[in-house]
Image (cartoon, rainbow, N blue to C red; front, side, top):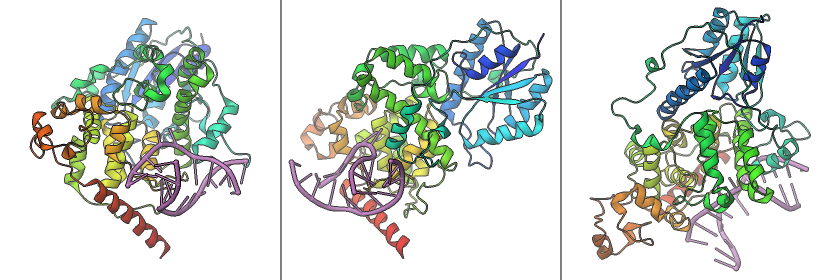
Length: 474
DNA sequence: CACAAATTCGC
DNA sequence: CGAATTTGT
């Protein structure tokens, strides 16, 4: 009988198309371990322990994974603490011959691996496999070996190594019976008082839920290119939280879409999958991308404005599209991508508040929180990223709201404005008092007045940007 | 529809 | 030296 093989799950909570599981199962009886590590991400690397919304997701995802493993006749081991300590401990407990894990790009992943290798020594190898991305991020390089900082040339180059390998089903497994496990409930991943997760029922965490979500998306995938920008429609895949937790492999998403749609129709969605890899690429190039501007010295004279920050977080800025997005985020752990850009622009430009405060709020509230993608998104909106951007862009929230047909979306998430018509709901302060009164809207009472005037906020942001550049030259 | 703003990347 | 995901007035 060959020796036990330890599979260490990180954010790849699935059995299908998982190279570490495949390799382990081919080598011997497997033990499957998840380590809830708040220590390493939360330590010297900048306090990026998992946020509250994602902890909710994790609880249900682990419940589903444990059930799936039990259906195969095995057991999921749950342990808590620094993975660099726990993984070697478990490996010794069960007498493992090797540890198997997927490659991830968060800075703490390498710290965990280094500690494990140092502890285990050469006799008990830590084997790392690709599979969390379309392409191993560090493999897409220019001819001179330099990494890419701009998406489009990166994407062109990546084509040479695409499509990803076809997905493989979960292997037949023999299980190693030993190993101690925590009780999941003892981790207290779910919110208690107050329980804000009432609106999270739209989600089904876990591998089966991810597959069902992908299947449901196939019905609307052909219209993705246009519909994805319209928050009032269900035009996006909503796969992001499943991908963030690795409940479905990105390669299987790729192949499912590429098989169903003609190449030209599939491209816009496959390109968005590419953005996920690109964010990982940026995080590898800039390990502190979540904490520091990609453009060194890109620091505006941020306002210290806790009341404004709080109004933004609660969805009470007086800009309906911003408030709708922020309330959707709080209620469901997710926000439509178009609205993320508008809300992020509003915080960093109109309110002139440090993008990292918004990034932190998203990290805590998003069920799809991903360090690289979140950082890249905020830096892109801010204009502080390493990628070249010729213009200092400031989204106009009212223009965007009308242009992308957000009226129904606003009615759904800002019900106090539900009586406003399609043309005036985007800027209720500009509607006639008669119309407002007919809709039951009293500004400053039932719904806030704008906390900042658009033109004034825009001018202030442009001035702050100009001042930063002037100081840079001086 | 034209034009403003206005820099760095990648080949 | 052409080009850069997603613009605003």
